[in-house]
Image (spheres, rainbow, N blue to C red):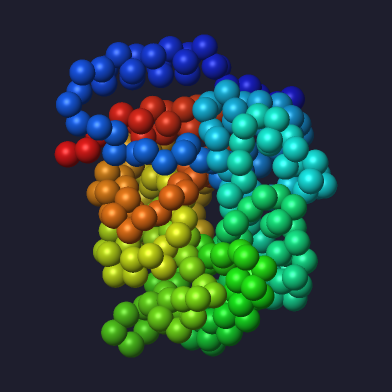
Length: 286
């Protein structure tokens, strides 16, 4: 049975937030459309897509990064359109991206997406230079196909790329060796931090190579490592974990990121996502 969010409580919390910020001199720090990564509601999407989209709409989301799953893409887009939810970005698996980039482009067009994101490069126990070299080659080739179709390819770094290489890491190698005309990046601030990176520093270093962002927070004190894997219970509501969300948003605004997607990989998104929304809307410019 699909679990619905207690909307009354969420609306009351939002009202209290509005009352608190009335009269504040500084404007909001977060001004982009409210976006959600569809993976957040993976469990309910598989059971009842319509009810899940109703919940997403009720929470106030107007953008989503996702894929249609078993639903025909045109039908999924229609379902989202009916609820005022745009799909500026969609995810795709590495093998599909590499083997059939033309079909990926067709799918993105049918979804109304501009950005195509890949979040995982196949590798063994440890991501190594050979994996990075192969990813660079594949991303450049697939990214060129997508660019020629009017789309933007983004690699979603997942934290395992922070193996040392030269004076930096394998993530530096990937960014510096991919063609900026064909390959851009999505920053998942949770996985960047978890793998040992500094989100603010990397935003400053690579500027507009970053086009999209996943907003999520890591439980305080969680053991970090460059595996790209951790318990879903280490995913906590924005503002309650280790990440400096205001500093990250400030830099993301500086470089011009336009699409942000809250992603909550925990097993209680109906509780945590509303808390993240309220926190995000509470942030004001310094």
